[in-house]
Length: 321
Ligand SMILES: [Zn+2]
Image 1: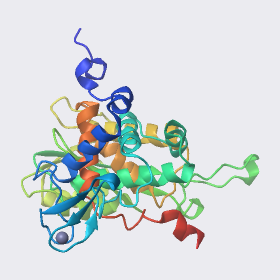
Image 2: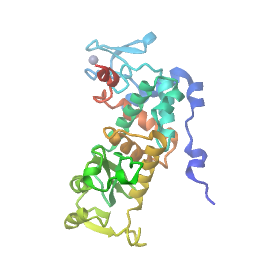
Image 3: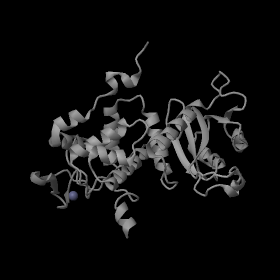
């Protein structure tokens, strides 16, 4: 029997051992190479784009020869004003991509030996960076659409006579949200957090090419999409697949990863940040057949080309204010 990819040596190309044996200078070189990919690691002034600079070697900083701005490899990126060393940041990213069902902030803080708040914000910044990969993605070919509800659990009363029908809208929590996912077979997975699954109709119209073939279940709100796209519908009360490619099994396996992430790693997720976990699970799903080193460096490259996070920079300081 063929060996599963995740068990093969090709799947593990980066390890904590290698990162720490390589040391700070080697990790710093990796940051430079991924920040300034077009110049193969040669510094570029973030203010004016000039290549000429003076190196302030002792502080790992540069001074622009044209505009005299001082900058570092992380200036203007989501790692600006970082406190972790380059090795620790690289190790953090390695751990983060290795967690195939996500990473709780508690576990992350223990593994990195940093405060919970630091780990929480770092993980959310990384999720923001990985989501940027598909921010403008338009799907083509065979695409599956589906929705799954998360959060807003209403605990049943202990005594039966106190219980209310939790299926009724008025008895549901206002924190309940639906994750709507579009998954291109052999392509990317896009996720969106909304209040109702029917809102997926507008999303499909915006994120699919006109000639895409769409697969959906029997829910009636998808009916209108049949006027716009070639559509294959599968009635889940009868079958999960017709045996000829009419199914939503790929998008379902995305939801099962997200469910395991939420129940196994996070236990409880805020409806405000559900989109982050949904994007994280989509990224893991899409890159599950790539080595952990390739995933780590892709994520680091994404983070180093992502501006300072509006949501996560100074998160705890703003919460305290
Ligand atoms: Zn400059």
